[in-house]
Length: 376
Image: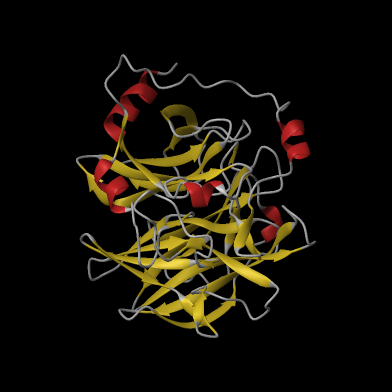
């Protein structure tokens, strides 16, 4: 995923989050049909969600920055936020972070109203990741999850370092964590079905008695979306895989359902349609959030329709991995987050804490439908 691997260098942490410059130069030559930016003359299709942007301007203690920004609505009304690489501690009044700011590979933030509680693990008395693999050479970045009875089931994507240098990491497998409710106590972590090199669990969607498990062919460029499904409540498998025409029980049968997605994207259902939110992944480090629409969870997909250009993104700061949070649906406006990070300079996140925090927008699905309906 477009996440960050951080390792201590003296009193600082180094960020291994983006692709090598050479790879970026090669990818810049990928040709793709351009998407027109949002038309500012029409009714706004997407506006900043100032309330959530303020909510995540945290100065500590606890979570002060991170990416991933997935969420799960809990039965008692709380929302569980799942983050990958996370910065803890405190942010100074001038917006800077101390150089010894604690870092962990993943964290939970529990929201109850405007109250936010950070949950992490502990390693020899110091903050640690909430989820940790058995091997000290690996780490987890969380995917999506779902409530099943009195437990949460959360996908965890396992990574390892391949060399002592920047960008030298790889995905090595996917596990499934079980977390008891309402205490949010981790009970166990077991392997998840993931034997076809697709990074499953970036998004989950329950519909018509099935749980749809969306994944990404992350090593392809542009990245491809795939989908598997299982009866609701049975994420442990067996799964069926969409092969472009029907569902089969063989993992190798999987076929892409869409090309040009983010590593992390989001699929929701509203009324008769399914909506897929992603950055326009057909271009390298695109700052444009787009949406696709379909009448089936596997597509075929109509679009893309441009929704929002992240104003924070430039040649130094990237926007990536949007995700929809349907528990905050407001008059057919769906809350969507996206992540920010500096493209090359790790020190920037200490000089300006605002860089490494999610941003939120609200998307008007009625207006999106109107524009998609008007397309030829």
